[in-house]
Image (cartoon, rainbow, N blue to C red; front, side):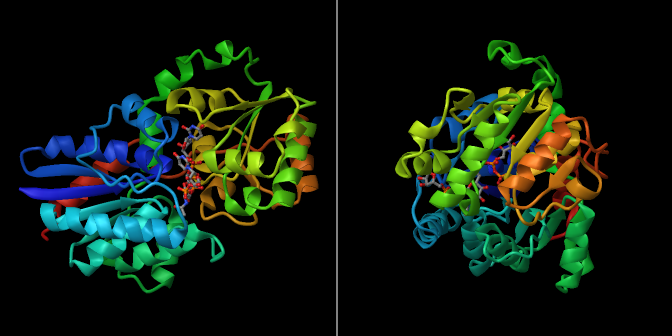
Length: 364
Ligand code: UD1
Ligand code: UDP
């Protein structure tokens, strides 16, 4: 019996691992899949809601680490996870994405000599000021199975000297989740409930430290959204990091009611909101991919993206961080200058099945 332990901690991790946990059910006679939640994200709307909506098994272990500086958070996860791995003695640890939980788990497992599978390997922004870039690079260096979502990931890993027999182009498990929930997404009544006209509103999300941790940058961003809200209804589900900063920078009073700020939303309602939007403006990683899959126009407010397929093939527009440029790009799209997109190769809802099969058929 193979024992496989997946480590998740932050919102995008849950969405990426749900289909992987499901795919291992097919092998229940030969493999036991265990889930460990680090507790990096802990609010109901950032964590539990996804386990319920996506019918994920409850975590077998919960480390309850919460927030903190990078060193504090990573170190707390490492200390607690080391004990879990010592008790469980898994044959393989699976880590999705690029968050601090991914990094911490990779470091602990590699030092304990446990093989590691990285789901979403090889993505590179080539910007080491982003904590995620450090997390990705370190995780890939110590991983034994590198499961890649897009061609750029294969090239990046090869350029870094990773052996070909460790790299597997399998597709995108975040898209597996979307594909398997698409009917629910399309029939969700959220737009009606919020009084929105389909195809005539904008959705925004922001949580990157470079956009929201600096008072000036966040003020300029909010002012730009307020201007766009004069053109179209604009819905902005606010990430806890962003909410804390809006409050601590004293910006709450500057936001007019025309900007619809909401709490973080559940998966199905949020995806449905994006599905029927005219435009999504974001700095999220996963949302660049989901909008590409759904063919919805997306503006990414960043200088770079580790997901170039969403630009080259999909509907993503990378416009940098000048708010004038973002506003101009948004106005162009609202004026009908849109980009046709295609669904990238292997984003077909079967990535997790491929991952489980590769792991189960591997000799180790
Ligand atoms: C983390 C990831 C980022 C990912 C994002 C997804 C790292 C370095 N960053 O960023 O790559 O894109 O998750 O959303 O791992 N907080 C709450 N409640 C929660 C979660 C967070 O109040 O449920 C607060 C924390 O206490 C902290 C802040 O939000 O003050 C940031 O949380 P943290 O997990 O450190 O980073 P994120 O910005 O969420
Ligand atoms: N998401 C959600 N509700 C929200 C905002 C985002 O369900 O209010 C989903 C989003 O559709 C995607 C994932 O959360 O599946 C992305 O998480 P986030 O943007 O926090 O992280 P990133 O992808 O940038 O690491």
